[in-house]
Image (cartoon, rainbow, N blue to C red):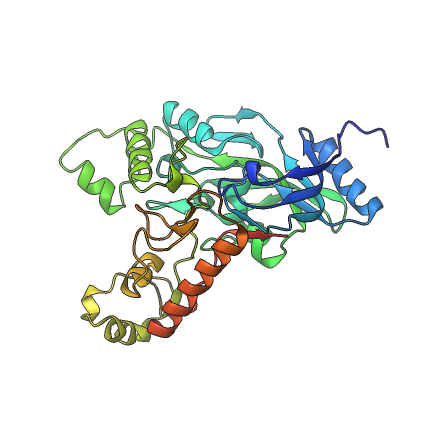
Length: 347
């Protein structure tokens, strides 16, 4: 097979992640076309090495030992309109650039997802969500390479099995599909989503709020929380929210309140279907003593966002793992709830 894919050796992975942590990839390549994606899959198979697919690097935690196989970075680009409200977008496109373009065109559906770091291809994998929106609400279909059947597939929304921070791609059959393009269905001249409390307060009494105004406000909120990538800001060297918001049986609300020493009405929670509730992981951390700025050494909790573990400078995977384990043990001891890590572990 004639190859346009350049395979390099011993490439540091830390610069390709927002956490800026981790060792080197034994082999590394950048795929800018779907043909090169296939080449990478076959190369890894022929050489008997594991394959890891890298997107924007915003939801990764790489071990200090790195990855002893081929890391294939997906850089398939392009944004193409398909009719009045459908858009085909390459997996390598910067997510926030796509949001900015859509809001400028008056296309509603992703305005509250502004400022999220990473690439378009990673959004269906994690079913990213923030401030009252989830990307699954706008996804029409996903184009991907099926590594099991060695063929290209077009997966409709239902086939992607989206739920809270989970999908076919990261939970049901992780590693099987390589996303190269996502088709979005947006709402021309649609009303902006103002379900999130901070947005409601910010725009209280204002009429005719635009999509771009909402997207700008979301970026500002994220910046204030250290969740917007800003060069030189140590709070931004993170993988975003480090723990998932746990979903528990509704009858546990009284138990959680008792453990926190507050009334049930003081425990923040949302319905999660089938008699279950979702409790903010950030609230659990704070109640267990893990507050903003917590930690000694190169890894700590962000000074602006309780859920973000940060690389204060020179942190290793081992440093982050120690802090993670300490938090998990503390919350489990206080509330009997086992927190789950959100970033993908590599290596």
